[in-house]
Length: 118
View 1 (cartoon, rainbow, N blue to C red):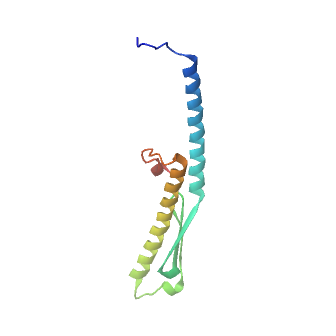
View 2 (cartoon, helix red, strand yellow; view 1 turned 90 degrees about the vertical axis):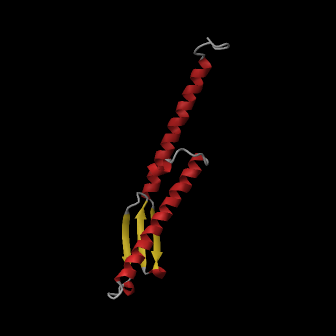
View 3 (tube, rainbow, N blue to C red; view 1 turned 45 degrees about the horizontal axis):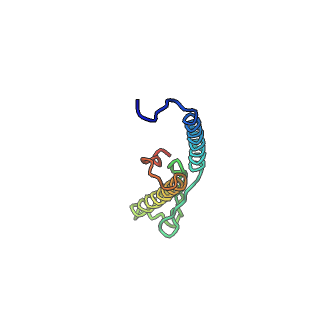
C-alpha cells in the first residue's frame, strides 16, 4: 500500500460530488448555448446586395433572396456564383459565432473540437 494512503477519506468523496455537480451544470449550460445557437439566423449578401442568403445555426439554408435586376438570362453563371458566395459567407458567419461562443464557454480551453458537435 502506498505511504500516506488511507483509503476512501470523506474529503475525497465530497470533492468528487462537487466536481460531478459542476460537470452537470457545465453540461446544462452547454446544451442551452447549443440551443440558442441553433435558433439564431445568419445573413450575408453578394453582388452589392442583389443576392441575400439566410442560414440557421443548424447550418441549413433558410432563404435565398434574389433581386430581379440580378437575373440576366445571358449570364446565369454569374447569378449562380453570387448565390454560392452569399450562402458560403452566411455559413462562415455561423461558424465564427459558434467558435466564439465555444471559446467564451470554455475559457479558451481546447476540448478536442467539441464545437463541431454543435
